[in-house]
Image 1 (cartoon, rainbow, N blue to C red):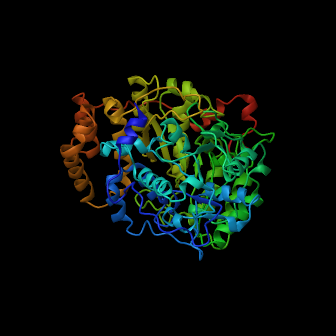
Image 2 (cartoon, rainbow, N blue to C red; image 1 turned 60 degrees about the horizontal axis):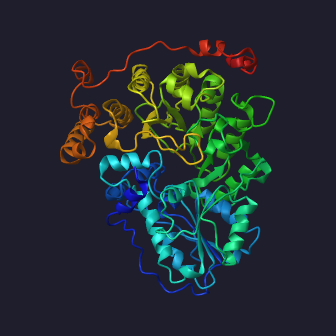
Image 3 (cartoon, rainbow, N blue to C red; image 1 turned 135 degrees about the horizontal axis):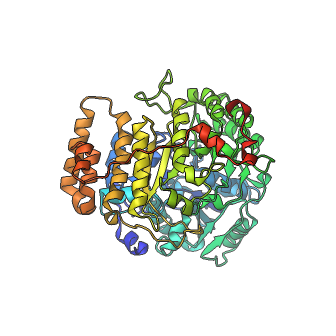
Length: 591
């Protein structure tokens, strides 16, 4: 697919218009030397945690759904000088790095609508952090294109609006535009830097000397490279953890993961855990800044306290983790805490850790799921966990270490046992799956469907979020190609997407009329719009999703595939299967 062509043809509809407002007069004091910003949709943190998932997935024309559900979602808080009261953690880390070289009164972090208050004749750099400027991340393009002919989700439309405002500034010839954040690669890969008026895209972290040298070059007015890869910190002491308020109270906990999945970009970073004193200082700073929510950012929460020790990282440090999380949630002023990413094998390795963390964290969770939670207040914990595939054949190719210390041949058993242990402790994770992987066969999709149906048969639950394979830059699968458009999905692949979402919605349909309205709405949307957009393979999976016809009937008619039951290993059998040198690290109270 020609990403550049598709993105240029995709224009957000009103009210999310990529054409910026007319710039106001210059900043009264001549502006700041360096101005930092991020798209509005990446800055908000008060309208509800799951709004971020929605604005990253829904197409721009469906913004009315967000406006109706969260009427005040775009309201933000400012400091007395007009700067942003909170910003994404990456912007705050860059700000902290810059403050080591430049005076505070020369730097401002602001929301896009306030850029004209800080950009002026003195401005030499405008730095933008963005996660999804063009909507080509794992989930965003999938769900945006399901609902419309544009792949541009809401947050990408707002990113375009921010870039357009910067481009329209009367002072644009005098300053450089530097882009960072996890979505910068989208701009260079699609050759959109000129259209968005971007001078340089930085891949890497602000702690790097090369990054700071880039800003100095920009301030001197020198020509900048189109892209710059900068080094990642090699020790935990080099990591900058900003002591200012961040969006969602995000505080970095670890970098890297160590499992080396071929499709994963963050795992290419060194495996480091942030010292506890830095974490707690950032937590207290967020509270002081008015934040009541904290989320420790990590690729795998379970490696903290076990990095570069004599114990393999996949055997969690129970005492360290429980102590850290207890101190975080017990900090005066912290009312809510949300888990970030994790892996599922540690739940099988140490169920007692999950039980103890549940006792510490559940009371401060803002997420409720009354239909399935056994907590007195119906609260749950929902970390993001990668399931990715139920096919052992495919797992061997793309993520052979995903289940360590267990063999990848036992991956379905690790998932089932891990999910059982998590569910028993009111953990109902959000689990990602990848559809359309390079080399994926119908048998691979059937194996994943077998696992999904087995989860349902056993009464287990997770929010399963399938997305189309996206080759991320610099990963080992960067040049691999899989399915690129939803209309190219096979019937089995469509069934996997629709089956997962049918299961996801059941806990939320508590009224007698909810399922009926959902079925009718799905069918009407299919008749009016979706059957033309998503091809002939979409029809029967849509009927499955809507519950219009019993699945058993559709299975008998060979319209869908009914997952086959299979035998899996128990936790005891999985522990017994460990290599002797690994089995020695299993705690005695859970052996």
